[in-house]
Image (cartoon, rainbow, N blue to C red; front, side, top):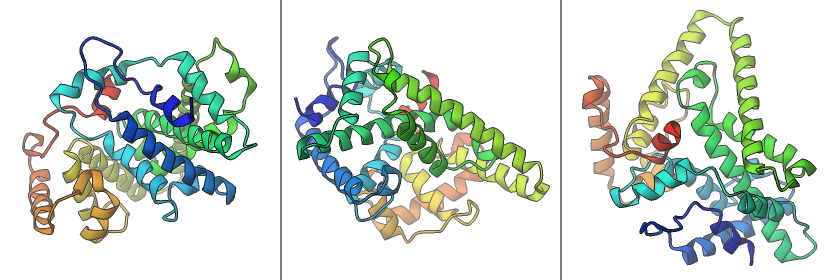
Length: 298
C-alpha cells in the first residue's frame, strides 16, 4: 500500500450504519500525490514545512494549508453531519496512527519512500495544527495576549519536528498523534503564559487594542465563511493586517469565495458591516454547524 492509499484510511470515514462516505477517495489520493511531490521538493531544498506551506513556489502545499483552515468553518450539509460528528468525536485508530507515523519516520533511500515520508510528515503537522487551532480559539484568551494563527502553526510544527522521531512514539501501546497533540497543548499554554507576562510591562492602550482585536476575530469566527473572510479583509486595519484586493483575496481563499462576482462580494461586505453594528441575532452567522463547532464541543 502506498502512502496516498494508506493515509486515506486514517480519515474517520464511517465503517457502517448506512452513512455514505462523503469523499471521492480516488480524487483525494491524486491530490495527495501532488502534495507529496511538493513536500519532497521543499524538503530537498532545505525548507521546513512551516516555510513551505507559506511559499508561493509550492501552490499545492499553500492551498492545502489554507484550505484546511477554511474547511473548519464550512457549514456541514445535513446529509454529512453524521459523518462529521464521527470525525469530531473519534478518538483515533491506534494502528492507523502508527501507520502514518511509520511512513513519516521512513527513510529516503528511494524516491517512493521519500515521497511517503514527506507526505506523512505534512499530514501529521496539519492534523496537530488543526486540533491545536480549535483548542486555542475556543475563546478569546490566546488572542487577548497577542497570539496569532501563525503562532499556532509554529507551535504545531515545532512539536512535530521535535517528537516525530522520538522512540517512545513507536510503542504499540502509545497513540502518537494523541501524545503529540497533548505536548503541543502544553506548549500552547506556556506560550500564552509567556505572552501574558510580557504584556504586564506594556501600556493599557496596547492591552485594550489586543482585547478589541480578539473580540472582533471571535465574532468573525461565528459568521458564515464567505462573510468572515470578506469582513476580515475589509476590517484589516483594525486587525493590524494588510488589506487585499478582492480579486487577489478570491484567488487565495477559493473555498470561501470561488464563483462570487465582485458585486456579490461588495454587497456581502456592506451588509456584514451593518449587521455587526447590531445585536448578534442579525449577524450573518452559520445556519448549520461547521466542523469547528463540533470539535469545540467534542
